[in-house]
Image 1 (cartoon, rainbow, N blue to C red):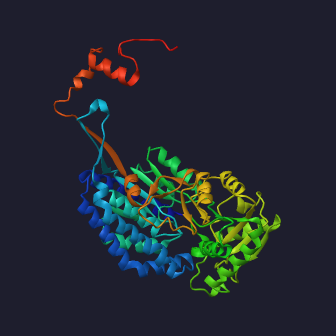
Image 2 (image 1 turned 180 degrees about the vertical axis):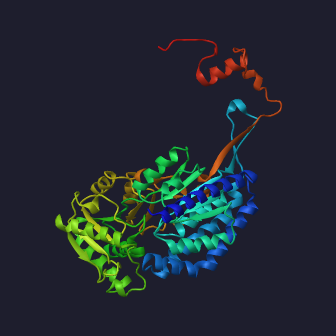
Image 3 (image 1 turned 45 degrees about the horizontal axis):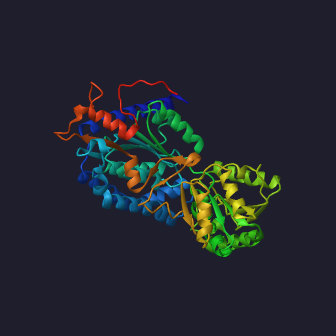
Length: 486
């Protein structure tokens, strides 16, 4: 780095430390925001998003080098507003202390759980849905009464600039602050002693984030993606499954953490399925993706080169590739269906995150289930079947962060249910009440009744109450007895 870059990096690090210190101090001054204050914060966030949506959509388009405006509105702006609305509606209920039952020994006393803000929350967003994956966690953190430092991806400079301006109009930096590419070393952000850290990205980077957070014992929520399978069972119409999976791989050019990564299809139906996916993709986006206003580009030349390498590697190892439309020269890469896949192909080993669909034949449901079980647990699983017993069998014998039946991904934007991964696909949840709980500390409060005889459990040991309690619960009456293990 030259002197100027070093100076800018030093200034960014100084700003990080300064904002973090100010947010900590502000939280100490107001450690428990009221429901009215939190709802007001959420309403201001919603109003700003509605006001800035046109500018944000244009900024995302420019940062992507071609992002369908309709997708930005429907899959970034709309779900974020739905999440904010849900939090505003349910916030008072979420904040209410939860009455709990005491143990029988402490009957007549009072036990409850109160949900208090954690403090300063760090949010690290990713580029594929730069609004939903930044403002969604921001809304959850504000609902829980926290202060937030938001790190936007380096590849979204225009979007970051717009968000910074949008949020600065209604929130002081001591409450919400936005950082972007000026933070040259992302580890400087994750090294801060946040009270909670939310990260969206790849498993490889997630491990680094978790390692860095562990140094401060910072709890983390990781949403990491993975190879999400779409399983088409024999009773389901092939053409309908093909249409929904084609849509799942076409939206945002397949650059979605919950996109169907590969399809498991009955062996005898593979040819029909491939032809149907190809046909439906053409109906959705036209004969040429380069001419479609509804189709999004691959985010960067580097990512496009990676996807082409996956295809070249598969072809070199004997795969058959079916291209679903013309185009791709301007990074609007059309959907490629890959058959005759083998385990040694790179596209069978890593998350694809783009418009490539491996199709894997199977002969029995047990075989399809075993195929999923043998791999890392995915963020989502899609089951296409009208047979309730077959569906239940698949769900009972597999694990995933979430499930949509007879379609793809719609479980994600229903905000009364949690969203999160399991195993390699992440940990922790956000959205809805679970998101509020994730970013709150569940504080147990026990209040002893004034006349409760707690002294009966004090030394000297051996009184009648202690002996009766021990006999009832442990089967031994004498609290002073010492017996060797037998």
